Length: 150
Image 1 (cartoon, rainbow, N blue to C red):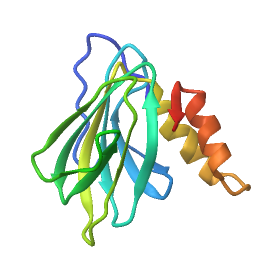
Image 2 (cartoon, helix red, strand yellow; image 1 turned 60 degrees about the vertical axis):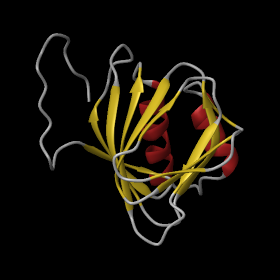
Image 3 (spheres, rainbow, N blue to C red; image 1 turned 90 degrees about the vertical axis):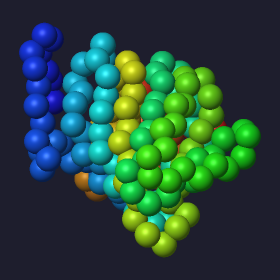
């Protein structure tokens, strides 16, 4: 989804690129250039989670819209409900999960963009391939975009 600089971009409610990230859909609303921010709508089904990882080159931000997300970090778990904003600075290990019985939904932003978007697209492409994606494959896709599994 390549965008031009200095052009107003409007992505409608039902629009965006849907990618499969380890079994959950993520709707990419903006991206395509590493000098811009990345923005996505992330439905989080019950039981879904992302293990501890570290972004070397970008800050990640979550804004919880629905349900509850459990954030995992060195400080221990923290529950974030609707209206909660979370800033995850680059270099800080974190993960998240939906430990509840109800679906959750959050907005995901990274700045600068590019890295996490590359991870999402790489995982989506691997999931469409003939081979089963294992933890080593996930770690390799992440590492290619300066994200390290912990």
